[in-house]
Image (cartoon, rainbow, N blue to C red; front, top):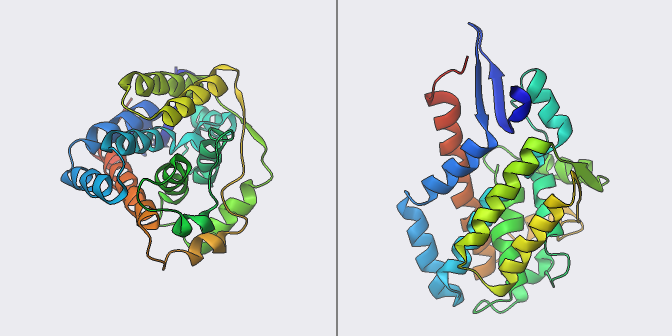
Length: 261
């Protein structure tokens, strides 16, 4: 039954049948594709040397970002629309996803975006890595078609949403993926705590509270793009890695694959 799936995309075909991609197909496809592209190996090598941070930690953060990047699609309202018809668009889902990512580090010291260029670039604090690799790339991962104006709208439209209700199939999927990430065991103590906290949040029930983003206005995000800083280039590079996996896997699953009857 459709209600047993967590959808990343669903579209009815003119000649009958339905073309869809589940969240499981999308996220696991991205994680698999991550290991296939040479750019990712170069990314890990560059930032391991530049930041003085073990590549396993950077890799685990990227994988966490991939697992969480479409969490905003998992809300009950969006998924119920998928069950009864098409769901090609999930407005502002990336802002919800980024706010969930912030919720998971609410007990840690996490810098505001304006502070990133002022922090030490060699062996930076975990909070700076988390914002640079997880939170901001999740918010920006649709950069090819999200404009500054639409990003402002996304942040403003979702600012008053204090919590979301997650559909049960999606909640079960995210618990499975986080358990798998936890078993990798190649991460820092702080990252292990983040994954544990995520599991606590999602196993507690279907309603999940959100945190605010690490800036007050979107123009703070825009204003730092011209500054040279390893942590700011890390934001751009991490966003690019997530975007290339996201786009390629979505194309494979939604366009190249079969039509599901």
